[in-house]
Image 1 (cartoon, helix red, strand yellow):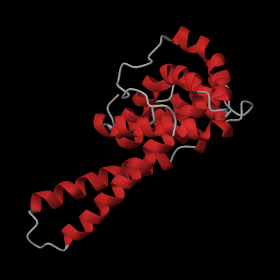
Image 2 (cartoon, rainbow, N blue to C red):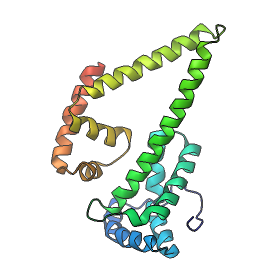
Image 3 (cartoon, helix red, strand yellow):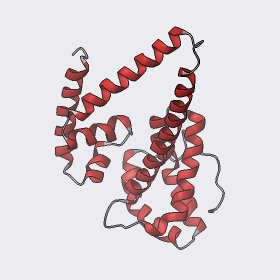
Image 4 (tube, rainbow, N blue to C red):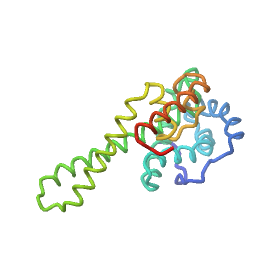
Length: 204
């Protein structure tokens, strides 16, 4: 395991956009050094990305305590797997954020699986209050409606909307992850959101 670092908190490592762009190039070099076991490079990289990792995870999980735990796991994974980073495929920042996104989604799926198990057990309890059942059904219907609307989008629209509005990526990061021009992402995002709005019946 890598060197111990302070707990990730919302304000850590949050440079402005200009500083962020300037740091991206240096981040690749730091990852190369981290892959060689350089603890000092890991600490520098931590300061650059910890806040953004926490922010992305928090947008997915909506729970500060869980987000802090997952963000720490992400940074430990970066330390352990830095040798797998391939500079030609994505920027160092996008690579780290992809790990963060995957970890956050894994936590959501794990939590959902636990909820599903509890729901199945609760359905066996005939004493369960009707209003709890009604609330559960309503939430399930809302999720299913959202899923149908997302599935009605083109693949690029769906991926762009999901990355930007549900996972917290910037338009530039979405373009990089999907390997398409930034202008294309913006256009697909606009068209996708219009279709989502119409599908969900949201007032203009």
